[in-house]
Image (tube, rainbow, N blue to C red; front, side, top):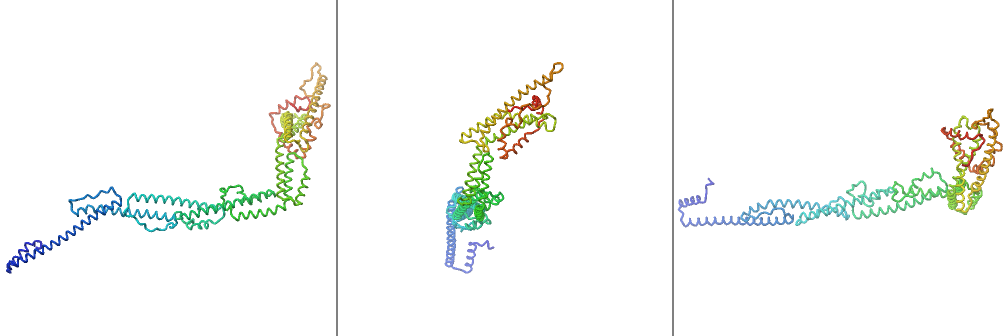
Length: 576
């Protein structure tokens, strides 16, 4: 078999052939020598090939070690176990031992390079967006990665840088959105087109474009800031103009006493009359057409005020007269009307100046009325008490006041309250006199009530009241004398007298003055006239009616009080 052929068997076969042929020893030696040389050449080639192969393997091993060292240095991997040096092992064994580590490190290197590319690409992207050289969403070129430094520390530095840039981008985007929102609100208030205003800064600021795709460049932020500042200035100037117009409208309305229906038509203009800039947020509140509308109305009213000047002035004069009348002060109304008419017809005074002067008079009149209010309130109470006193005297002279007729219990209740009120009159008059004198001393003038000095009215009332008290005292003495005479005349057959509790027949006491006499009433000759002139009688009647409230529980007490008077003609004392 071919597998059994060897060099020795072939040599033996060659010897046999030579023997048959008869080759000489010399020829045989030559052939054998040639064979040896050929074998040596074959071995030599094989050795050379083996040497080259070994050298290549050694070079490959050296290259692998260098690559391993380079990768370890680039990746900065200190935890990877170094390949053990096998000095006793073969070259192939050493290569086989280092190959897995190289493969692992190469994979790790490729992965690390991809991470660096990803991070650096994002950094370049954000930097370009901030600088304005790259549009949002635009792809940037693949960055060059330094493969000699792929350490985790270096990668972490890039990641930290990226994180800071992402934070910066987020802050810028937030600023951009805030600016856009402010521009939107300002445009809404000013009645401007928001879309054209904001896209003029940058097209990406349109609402239809997502937030992550909006420009965040320095140029965009600068333009947004300038736009907001410009709009704020426009808002301030427009608000100032509108408030000025609103003030003019109010002045003209007040001047011409415009009805509320007419004023309400411009509520959208006047509602921000005293508002600050930040408080004006309603849509279209500062639109140009709104300001123009207010300007037109101001011009219209300004022209109209001259034609209505006389009517306005007389209304103000009527208001002034009402204040004086309410404070019971007398003025010459006819002379005031003539003066106003003369000023208007002469045309020597501006309508606004005339009205301002009248407003000043009204203000002073209100102050004067306010200073008189406390005294006038007490005068009201005094007059009301005098009316109740007059009614009580009429009531006490009524012989039928205790019968069971309808409404008798109401009169009893009123009489009880009237007695309490009448007993307070002296103290009320004393207080009123003191306050009136203090008022006159502080102002150096008399306190006039419907043209009459109030102190004179009070002095007259006090004098009349004293006279009336004297009359009452004289009447009571006269009544006691008459009762004694009647009791003496009506003694019984057994010497007993008629019980004093038994009511005698109602007779008019001679000398008793009626309620209408000069000494039986408060100064109605003066007070009633002034009261009726100023429309006060109606108010007093209302008070008198309101005082008539039914209280059955007080009827008995009123009857007991009334039964102490023998005659219905005896008036109740007006002083405690």
